[in-house]
Image 1 (cartoon, rainbow, N blue to C red):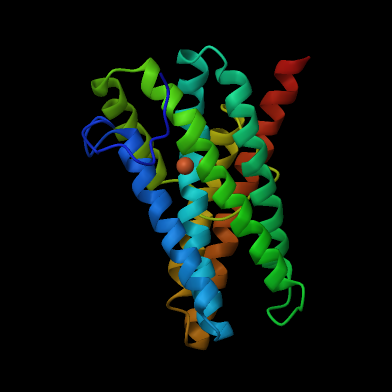
Image 2 (cartoon, rainbow, N blue to C red; image 1 turned 120 degrees about the vertical axis):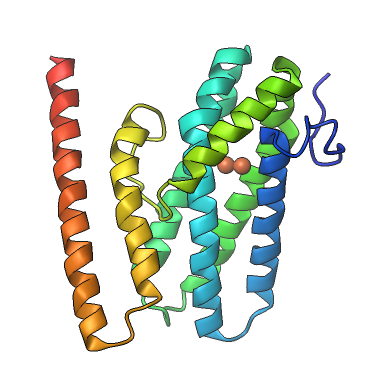
Amino acid sequence: MARTIKDQTVEELGGDGSVLARQRREHAEMDRLMDRYQRLTDSEEQARLLKEIVQLVFSHAFAEETVLWPAVRCSVPDGEELTARVEQEHQQINDLTSEIERLDPQDPRRDEMVRRVFALIRQDIRDEEDELLPRLQDALNPAGLRRLGAAWEAVRRSAPTRPHPAVPRRPPGNALLGIPLSGYDRARDALGASTGSTAGRRRAAVVLGLLAAASAVVTVVVRGVRVTRRR
Ligand SMILES: [Fe+2]
Ligand SMILES: [Fe+2]
């Protein structure tokens, strides 16, 4: 009988490396960071912390869409319906976060939009821990949960770290379009922290320009392949 993974012991979840234990640990970290954000009053500190939350949430969700939800669809009878719901939540989180990123930091709508995106992230966590992941727990043995945990972790470590609403939520489109963007996102994250000087900023702009061009080329090629296949 499926029951929430929220209150189970790590042993019941299949051990430390199980996908269930890994998911719950990261959800707790997201929750902790969102709580901390809501206690901050300094807008610069809020902006720094929001960036950290976005990196954590988007790499986590991309790896779910790439390895976890396809596994749920293969092994859980109503997996299609369950994963469609969380994919819709992920899409809303993508749309809203990219809107927030386009806003001026002083825009009065920003606080309300951040509150809405945090509420969506919390809803997504509840749907996963209370419904979707318990069903996966019923379908797989502990060794299977650990193998899936290792696959999810490997993808998460090289996943995009920013919202990309135009990238499809399902494989193969998400992997084909998302993985090239991952290099671009991670370069932006790394360079963002070390571009204090004018020369540093210029170097960063050149590197990012090259990576953006490479991502665009891959996107065009992949779209071309998809259009050709549809004919
Ligand atoms: Fe999750
Ligand atoms: Fe999720």
